[in-house]
Length: 227
Image 1 (cartoon, rainbow, N blue to C red):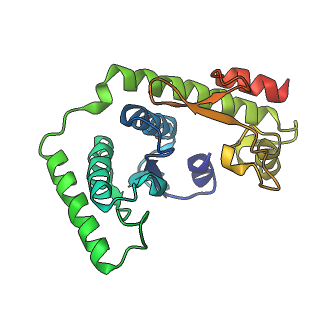
Image 2: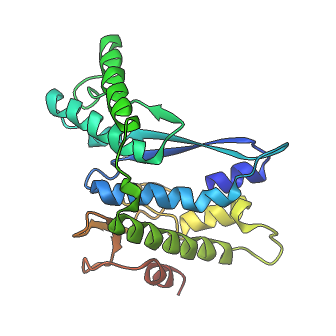
């Protein structure tokens, strides 16, 4: 939606921020699959030339995924950046490894950048292609399919007078208030539902679940909301 709106409103350069390790319980394989799904969905929007729409891949480590122990946090930063390099990002946003313990000071930022630089250099010297893992591909395709179900559901909320539902503020607001666009941590938000339940499954993927804890496909979730 953000890339679609950026292009619709004539932005020519779009930075796709890809935050890894979110939620923290994600396995690396499922994390990578999620990011590949994002890129698959927005890639058709890109075009070059005058008045084009360029997509720049920016990766980062999820802030809430850092452990409190600083030695473990250093390892986590390096491992996360190495995984991010599977996407061949144009920009790597280095999130300081100290953030769970204290706000990064100048020396912490320098150390974090050195850790990240080494991970980047190692990856550029011949990283295996993790994007070809069958489990990653399967989950990527699953997420792309489910995202399209959600986008179609959002579009269905628009009235006949709306020419483009995905750029229409009222339609997008309705998608939030009815619960199509939702997240567990929005529970106390005055506008969003915050009623969605999520679980980490056996693959390490974050999936929607019903009240009984069993996974829900996006089609099932949409039907429960829209009837």
